[in-house]
Image (tube, rainbow, N blue to C red; front, side, top):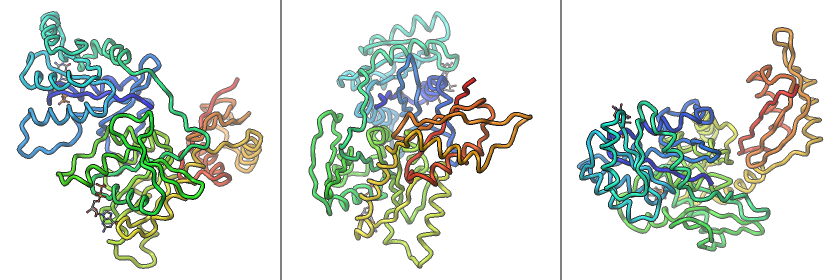
Length: 438
Ligand code: GDP
Ligand code: GDP
């Protein structure tokens, strides 16, 4: 599980600039997803071998109506307090310590989480002096940076990594329950869906040891099969208390996704796949999880015998970057087709963990190569010497080749298709890597 580092602070102190600066070291991993809007609120960054997920809370949409700046900051801070492992509190040296800064600091002091003050826009010695004033906030660490010029950001990353909880990898246990996260925009019907699933099955609500904070995992059994719905607490609470729906918590969703093997991305059939849905589905994709797109509220759609095929095409077109995802239509309200979900989840989890024996894999690769040899490139032709699958969850294949530069996208695609035609990988991404072996 990757630790989450939240960047909080007032508008205009330079949070986004800092965020972009900190993730730069890892641009390669933050691939652009075709069809997904560019502005990202979170990204992975790596420093000294630790990978963290940085969240730019400034980008989270909050109600603007009637909000004072202070209320805005407070809510952001609260979101961060709940979900993050380490908080980076960005302040602006050119403005000195402001009243809202004091207010946020007061709240941050009360949580038992490391808080690092990043004093931004420190670009000369005078500012260095002024930055010292921020020690008066009473937080753990004060680091001077200039996000714009990239100064001090290495020190900041050092401080962040030093403050992280120690890494405890969470491997899927053999024979354990399939871990499932249910994510989606507010009001698409996540809680209704969970309740519809729970309505049919034997349910054990448990505070499973090791889960964080107020996350509640629910164990569901059907016959021999066990499923753990991770972090369903937020949904239930919301369903009970009639308060204005809290804005969807990016951090919460990220957490749930990271702990899951299979992610249900719930969308509303009457809206189709929106941009926000694309972004949310992107969490599952980027984390290499198996994915089922659950198109809910199917009861509200007027249908004929072609509607489902047509809607499936629409969903797939909007989520083209994850063409492996399963698409399933349900009505949480009437319960229609809900009973098919657990078997689908089981299948997706099995595919996600599938391991192909080396011999079989190499037979397949040899046959695929003979059937469709790659074209030669400037007189040189790609040769595949050997293939192996060192990873599962998701499956990852390494091809040792004469020259990795000779691998064209289309040939990689061809090999992936052959693998998918031969083995059951529905619902899961698979990764193909090519290494040159001289
Ligand atoms: P956010 O609202 O907190 O995300 O702030 P932004 O990252 O959008 O930055 C707000 C303004 O501060 C922009 O005009 C930036 O160019 C400027 N800014 C950000 N970082 C620095 C810095 O290190 N030095 C200076 N001088 N300006 C900065
Ligand atoms: P969440 O915010 O994603 O957890 O969504 P909720 O489960 O709270 O549902 C939001 C609204 O959609 C509620 O008014 C539900 O009654 C309604 N809803 C949920 N699922 C369905 C469905 O399958 N069909 C219809 N017609 N309404 C639904």
